[in-house]
Image 1 (cartoon, helix red, strand yellow):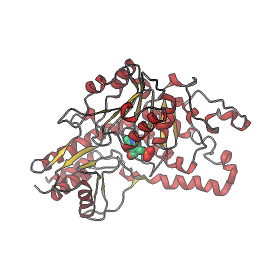
Image 2 (cartoon, helix red, strand yellow; image 1 turned 135 degrees about the vertical axis):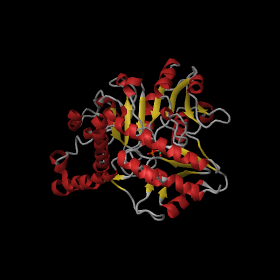
Image 3 (cartoon, helix red, strand yellow; image 1 turned 30 degrees about the vertical axis):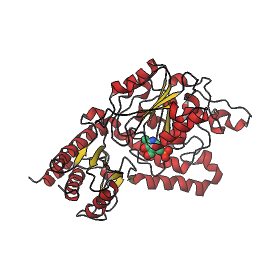
Image 4 (tube, helix red, strand yellow; image 1 turned 135 degrees about the horizontal axis):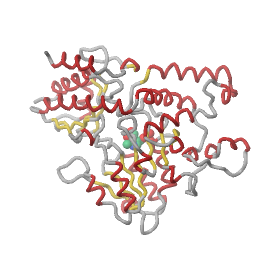
Length: 419
Ligand SMILES: Cc1ncc(COP(=O)(O)O)c(C=O)c1O
């Protein structure tokens, strides 16, 4: 049997939920649709999103301001429809989770509460390969509090010759001067899944607050934020959560921090919903993550997040992770054959427990990652994500990617990279 026929057979035995998504047409290659591997950058649109967003839009047309209370999905408590599924997705209690703003905005709002530096304890630990937005955010927080960002930020680097961080090395860096550990749950570049419970515990033992950027983890791997004792976390919804470009983000605050007197930036959405329209000059924040809200939420941005979270709720992140493990291992096997004769190397951990869906591929210096991604797109109909100078990121997404997609990606790479 040909490798392609084998891939098709695997798809028949282990189908995902591709029929629930709009898969873009290919702009090159032999197949009508793209083989889409950029779900770690922007997930595909669920088919239900358009219909349900139009329903919300039409409530505005037919009800005007009365839609706040009278729409089928009333706008005033709309964000509460997202809280249950979002909390189940990240392993949180419902009152620990809220969907609001964008990811970096949420990181800032959470750092207002959780980065409380003193002269003797003011340092922030991040990965050297943190997504730049996180790096800018923590540097600006340090400066905001009057510290020199170069001194305040500790950047964790892998050992020489290695691509990923070792948990023991991370733990070793957590000294008594660390106020905050803020790491990516899954690293955006290497795809490494960090040991969130162990690092959280070690950070606490060192007296630090531990927050997580879950942009590449939410909807990708199962999480248990409450059980792991994570202090706070934030994630975006446009990657594995398929909620559209710039979609609203999530935030988590552990129960033990709720209802206390931690400083927060407030607006009228920070106050208890039942008292909001009393129009009093002082807020009465609820003992929930809702207290971190500031403004009234954009309903038409919440709608796609609601649709998508319902899908995750129905199918279950555990089931998706199982398929993800099978699909990514299959892609890895296909790529290992490409690697035999070509300057191509997977830099993501080989242990499936230390990675999510994504495999990051370092390509030889001969061609830039961007140029290679273009060739894959226009000559093979394969959409991969590139990070210059030399990393291609391929994320088979268990909801909609297929074994045949993986076969196509590996075959295209073999043709595009000279031996
Ligand atoms: C790990 C990580 N952090 C932060 C961001 C920035 O997110 P936003 O622009 O939604 O604030 C991204 C965006 O891709 C990301 O991957």
